[in-house]
Length: 268
Image (cartoon, rainbow, N blue to C red):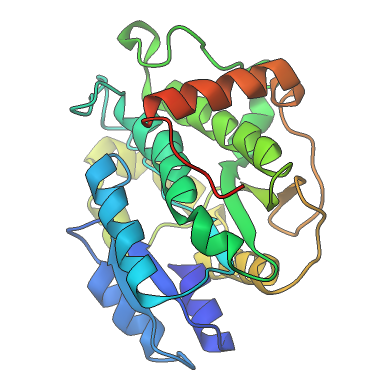
């Protein structure tokens, strides 16, 4: 919750999202220890549509508008070697990393539309640099035959970039290319022995969460980038995979995401 911690300390009223159970209450206490205005916790599991609806309703009951939405939730669990499917039939990574943020953004769009200068910030991954030819697997979005944790994760992150580019025609939107983020010691200790051993060198050189929090806070409170741009953690424009610039593919992705999430109503 680095962005929430830094944003709350700077003064804005923050609603921090978290998936129960876990460390969200402890993180909220850490945020509020330095907050200008106490943040509140909105619990949501972005793989569960009803949980998203409940979270959006909770926010709508407590605020009249929403200036910024940061879609930072993601699952990238390398121990999930076989695909897991939600009750709606969607592969878990796709549901959590793409369909969930898509539904949440639509559900909160009336509050965003009520703000003077709303902004949506989506989060992708620097790992996509190694996959310049990655494409959305239309017709096979929830097909178990091509699944691996890595493929599923980056497939969903490509979708986040493409959704941002489409959203930018409606609202101020930007996507951040996030590098590897340093895990806290408790999370590293919870990894299986082999993964913990393999991840240790990477974790030493990973970016601290606080640094990304600064970038998100700058995007949330300022106007450093133009709508629709894809930027790195220093807010410098970077190129997305080539497929992200295919307008027909972006339109198809939007249509299929709409169908998968129940043909959502948007404020724009």
